[in-house]
Length: 89
Image (cartoon, helix red, strand yellow):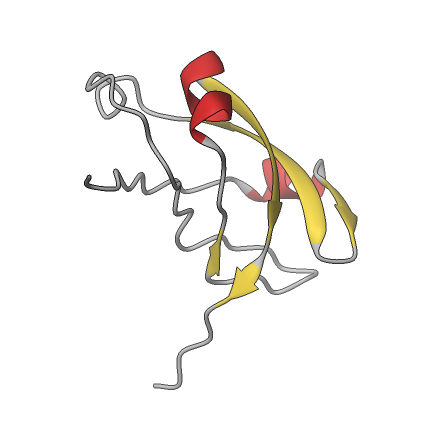
């Protein structure tokens, strides 16, 4: 069972429209249809390289259920726990 990974680059306006509450927040995002053509049960979505000036979010990983992904593959409403993956360069 392979986990499909989508790389989503969100605009600052889209991030600012998200409602943040502690470590759980909801994100409406659009996934490229070409990447979601393979209709497999995605276990996880990794949202890489989120950039936001005010909160300075750079790399976070979102986890979503397969049901959520299969329900609305184009526009997802994820309520996921954020895991900060900080890198030191």
